[in-house]
Image 1 (cartoon, helix red, strand yellow):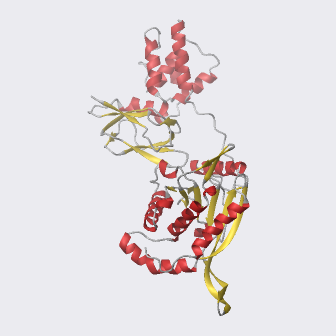
Image 2 (spheres, helix red, strand yellow):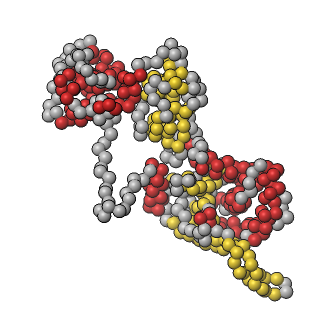
Image 3 (spheres, one colour):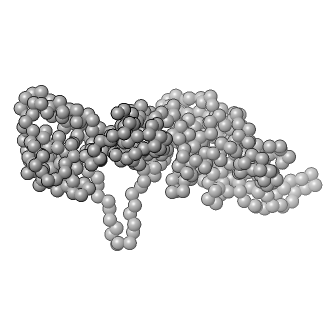
Length: 442
C-alpha cells in the first residue's frame, strides 16, 4: 500500500512560495492522475495543483490561507487502494495543519501519560481534539459539554482551544519533565494554527448601503498601488499621435492575417512592437531601482496590463519582446490575454517585467496617468483612437481633414528618469507609430 507525497511544484524561477486558497478534494476522495487537487495563489496569479498519480487522498497537511514553500509536501495520496477512515481523517483535515507533526508529538507522550478515556462518549471527536483534551486534562464530561461549531455539532480545534482559553486554569495530568516538554511542543503546534480574531464587518447605518470586503487580489492591488506612489516620484508626459496609417493598414491585412495565422490582429501587438523598439533606442527606460542602485536590464520584457472579468487587473509579461516579429508578438499577446481571462496564467507569466503598457482606451478613456509597476521606472498608457479634425500639411498648402488620433501618456520615476529622457522616449514611440509603412508585409 504505497503513499505518494504531493508537493508544491516549482512555478517559476522567481516564485518561492504560494498560499493555499481552496481544496478541491477532501480526504477520502478518489483522484485521477492530472486531476486538480487544490487551488493556490502567488502574489499575482491563482493556479491549480494537479495530482501526479491516481489514488485516494488520505491526508491534507495545510489549511486554506496557509503559506507553503515550493517543494513542501501538501498532501498524501494512497496509490494502491485502501483509504483511511473517512470521518475521522476528514475532521483532521479541516482542523489541523500540519496534523502529522502534532499527532507524532502526542503519540510520543502517550506511554507516560495517564490519559482520559473517551471511548464511552456518544459523541464523535477527531483524533486531534482528543489529543488536545488529553494533553490539557479535559475530562469526558467537560468535552461533552463544549458547544461544537463543526459539522453536525462536532467540536473543532478552535472550539476546544477557545474553551481552554476561558477555562481559567489548565489542569495538567502530566508531571514528568519529558512529558511537560512534549506538551509544550503540542501546544505550540496547535495554537500556532489558530487564526486571529477578525474584526466585525461594519454594517450599514441606513440599511441601504452594501458593504463588501475586498477579495484577495483587490487587496494586493491596493497594497501595490499605494506602495508604488510612496516609492516613486511619478511624473507624466503626454503626446498626441496620428495613427491613421496604422488603422488603414490593419483594416487591409487583418482578415488575411487571421485566415493564415489563426490569430486575430489587434492594435496591441503593433503598439508592443513599437514600444520594444523604442526601449532599445532608450535603454535608460529599461531599468529598475534597488535602493540606491540602478539595475540596467539586459532583456526587454514587456508587461501587458489586462483587465479581468471580475474587474481586477493583472499584468502578464511578454519575454524578450524585442526579438519577436509582429506575428510572434500577436500570438504572444493573444495567448496571454486569453489565459488571463480564463484564469490559466502560470505564476512565471507575470514575473520579470521591465516595462509596462496599459491600454486605457479599451474603456473609452482618451488618456490616463498610470501608476508605475514596481520596481520598473516607466509605464505607458494608450488612449482611445478617435476620428478628429486635424490640420494636414501638403506642398500645395494646409487643409483640414479627418484623421485617426490617440494620446500616449507616459508615467515615469523622476528619481532616476528626467524629463528629457521620459519625454524623448514617448516621442520616439509616437514617431515610429506615425511613420508606419502602409504597404508593410506581414
